[in-house]
Amino acid sequence: MNNNTEQKNALCKIWVFLRKPSAKYSLLTLLVVGFFSGIIFWGGFHTALDRTNTLEFCIGCHEMHDTVYQEYKQTIHYSNRSGVRAACSDCHVPKDFTQKMVRKAKASMEVWGTLVGTIDTKEKFEAKRMEMATHEWDRMKANGSAECRNCHNLDTMMASKQKPKAQKEHARAKLEGKTCIDCHKGIAHLLPKEYRDPDEE
Image (tube, rainbow, N blue to C red; front, side, top):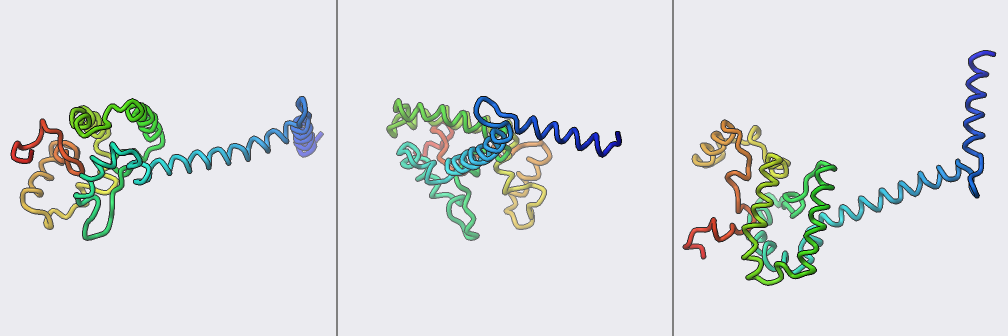
């Protein structure tokens, strides 16, 4: 028996196996239905994931809308001469799929805080601000401020266009292997009171 005949026989056996009925449907039918169901599920999953990355979703609860959103609106990340806006997810959600899923899982636990009213008043929010900020700073420090570096890169900055102090600090940061969050805490939200100048209070 030649090679072609053997291959045809093997393909026929596979085809017969795929068409062999299960309890009610053929294996081929199950595979086709499973394939298209997977596509629909994956599309729905990504649509939902993208929806949770929108500014509207992030500020949907009054805890965010009345505090950090109002602070963010006063910063260059919200309104600037170039018209480029960094939304919540640009800074707080990693681009890498695995890290994004880890962050989303942690964020789903934060929903519990909303349900039980952990930070539902300005006073409660301020009392927890340092703890929440520290969690986020630690996360950003651990990943080398990856979200910042999606837009900002020390290697491509035009130092000559920066103020002398910025030039010096960026050169030092590069030399010492510092990451953005080491120096730029409070860039989009108020610092916790422990970090603020008493005159700012």
